[in-house]
Length: 84
Image 1 (cartoon, one colour):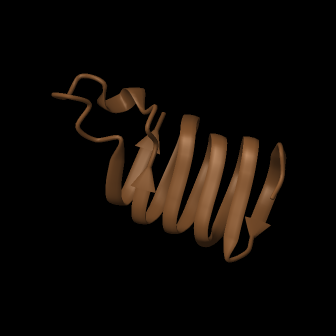
Image 2 (cartoon, rainbow, N blue to C red):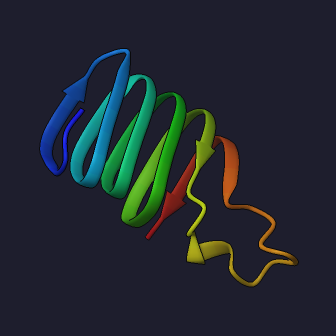
């Protein structure tokens, strides 16, 4: 658990409350603001400037990539999610 982080986090649960730039690998990954890669079963980022999530459940609620879809259909995806 950390405020801001730059680098690689490796644990069962990774929690970065602030800005995370780098790589998170674990069962559950959380980042306030993601720039980088999350690889795990459940990945969650409040927002992402540039980022990729690979896992079973991937959530970026503030994902502008899908803003044109009906009712903001895809802030979460299975297996792969991104924001560029």
